[in-house]
Each structure stands twice: as C-alpha cells, then as structure tokens.
Image 1 (spheres, helix red, strand yellow):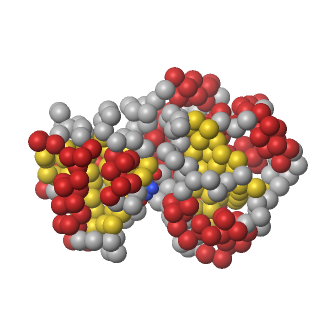
Image 2 (cartoon, helix red, strand yellow):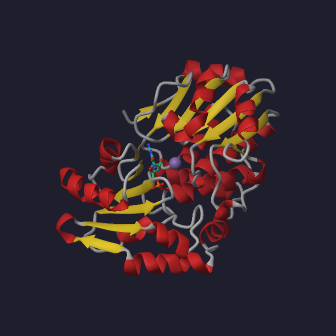
Length: 336
Ligand code: 5GP
Ligand code: MN
C-alpha cells in the first residue's frame, strides 16, 4: 500500500483535538536525520502558533550540523535524560510519531508510547507502518515526512499559519531526504518547496548550513573511506565501504560524521547497490542504497533486522564486521 490518507472523519476528529490548547509531544526516530528533525520542529513551530504546549522527544542525540535549527536545543534527548523524556510522553494529551513506522525505531521508548493515554498520530513515509497509533497518515511516495507535514497543515486548515520558521524546518527535511532534490522527488515535493520559498525560506543558506560545516577530520575520513575502505564488486554492480573500530579511533568519529559517505559509492558508473558498514562498539550498523527496482529495504528487513525505503535502508547486527560483509555478499545476488 502506498498511501494511507487521513479520512475526512479523522481530519475532523484531529481538528477537534487541536481546537483547544493541549500538551503535545512529538517523537521521532533514533539517530534523527534532517527529515526527522525538520518535520518535528516544523510541526512544533506550527502547533505553538496554535497555542499548544509542545515538546519534542528524541531517542538519541542529533548530528552537530543541525545545531543551527531554531529551538533544536529545546528537544529532550532520552539518552541524556530518561526521566524527563518518559514524563513528557506519559503526560501528553496528543503524541505525534514522525518519520518512523515501527516502535523498534525508538528503542526503549516503545513501551512508554504504548502505555501513554495520549492520542497517537503517526505521520510517516516508510514502508509497512505498524498499527499502534490511533491515526495513521502514511505515504511511501512522499519524499519526506516534512513534505507530509505541509500536507497535514493544509488538511487541518492551518495554511495561514505557515511562516518562514516552519518553512526552514520543513525545507531542511526536503533537502536531506531527497539528497538536495536528486532522488525521491515527486511533483508535490517541488510544489511544497516553491510554497515554502514563497513564505521566506532561504534555501541557499539552508544548504550551506546543512552541508558546508565539515570538520577537517570528517573530510579526511571521507578520503580515507573512499581511498582505503572501498571494495567494488563489478559482477554484482555493487560497492561496499566498511569502517573498522580502529577507523573510529583514528578519525575520532562521532555522531553524524559518517553521514552521506554511502552515497559516494553510487557515483561509480554502473554501480546500483551500495553498502556502508561500520563496526561500532557493540554493534555493526549498515546503510544500504540502491538504484531502480533493486529493493534494499527487503534486503535489510530479511537479513539485517532493519528496513526503511526501497532505495535507502539500514540495519544492524551483533556480529563480527567480516561476517557481516560476507553475509552481505552472500545474500546480495537474490536481490539483483
Ligand atoms: P541511513 O542509512 O541514512 O541511516 O538510513 C536510511 C533509511 O533506512 C532511513 O529511512 C531509516 O529509517 C532506515 N533505517 C536505517 N537503519 C535502520 C534500522 O536499523 N532499522 C530500520 N527498520 N530502518 C532503518
Ligand atoms: Mn524521512
């Protein structure tokens, strides 16, 4: 199923829920990316203009390059303050679940979400949303959850409140989930971008803030990854970059430092599948990308306890780095 739209009845119920000031919590996925943060902050700015009391709960910390986003420092990070995060969710009247489809994407906050009395509204563009929310707005053809928040604001008749602050946040999600409008776009993506730009978004400035804030060690890590850690498998039209624990030490790799490396593999002529595999302290994390009909979502789901989108997915394993690489090579042919 591509889209589960909110029915007229559901939209009317949600409008009623939001008719008077409420305690609203917004939660998004672990290791939040630009879309997770952009959709959450955009919705927060919007709901605050409707006089709601809004808190964003992040399961884990956000990457450094998003520090520029307005009010991001007000987010509650579960990993840093368990009690506050749980208390916010438990006391919410309404809980928005943004940019994730499954409770394992929020780790230990899953049970809290199931237990809270809050009305749960899921807005997301990943495949196969779980049935835990009261309301589900799911559209796997949307570029980003941020694009869907723009639609949601329309649906509940809030367009007159859209301003540049909301726009900056949502535009950040559009940029990051489409690789600066290179993939996953649809006509609506550009209509939303145009509308936000008309409302005052400076897209040049946003792209500069998001992408041109590398530290020197990060750029050197990128060079190292491509020069020394890339394996090309021409017979499978695939490429792998694997980083070891030692690489993490040598380059002092921190959250967000490896963002985007996977995409360089797809710059190779003829390469249609990319795997970026990294050996973290307790777990091996994977990012997969593909072109066309090859579904790395299925590959991640079937073999690496993960998921995501057809052309962009991820997974994890408690295993040795070499074993994960071997397994990837072994199962890959089934998906070509
Ligand atoms: P990234 O490779 O940028 O971390 O993630 C790409 C996509 O895969 C994202 O949409 C993300 O939601 C999904 N993804 C990444 N890691 C996991 C995972 O461990 N489990 C699931 N279900 N999805 C993941
Ligand atoms: Mn997204």
